[in-house]
Length: 281
Image (cartoon, rainbow, N blue to C red; front, top):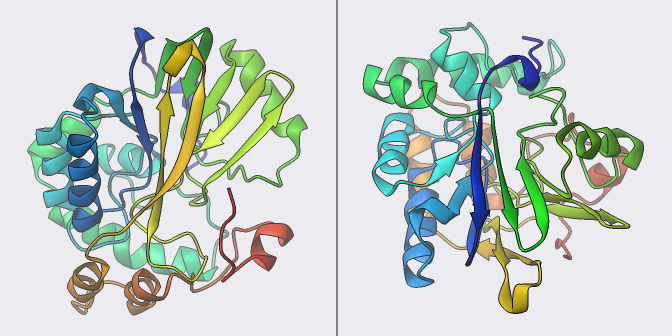
């Protein structure tokens, strides 16, 4: 489904935000990872309204309904991902922009109907209320959250993606910082006074051979804009076991444990060549 995020409606402007901000994406129905991240936020005294997701709360794992309900109970914020849009519009596919006939596309025809079948009307109504973008001012910088990119919700933007693809996002949103998700890998790319920041996802490992997952934290100490990528350890063995229900791809339950993706179809050559290597940020 070829949707542009600019066509989809509302933007939530939070005004000026202060204090620590927890950034994450791609929960992917991974209840155990979300529980672990919520505990981190509570331990670090990060308020729920300062915990912001780049979308795709629902995805590959076994507990979509429980995950949405915990997210709602927590009170964290999120923009929509392509999966939320497709689910709330009762579409027939996940809208991930996978190449037709690819392994990812074939797998999506298994996990997406599963997720559809598990979500309550209450959860769907919650997803319908998520904004398409979140924006705020942090220190002296304007920050905008997008899922894939400002122009296309399912656009895959990686560290190696040319800056010429990223630059128009800053211009269109009049932002200094773009925080994005969708691609599944944590990274940052800075050019002059502009920053593209992907905190990573907590629902699946980052193809680095480690079951730990990724998030990031913003801090405004001394009124300076600081960010740090962090890894999250959670009960991944339980997540994997729950996925082995005969209704979801076994390959994804294996990835949860090994930290290695089943394939690198969506990855550019550079990111593909780094499969299994420790991520250095």
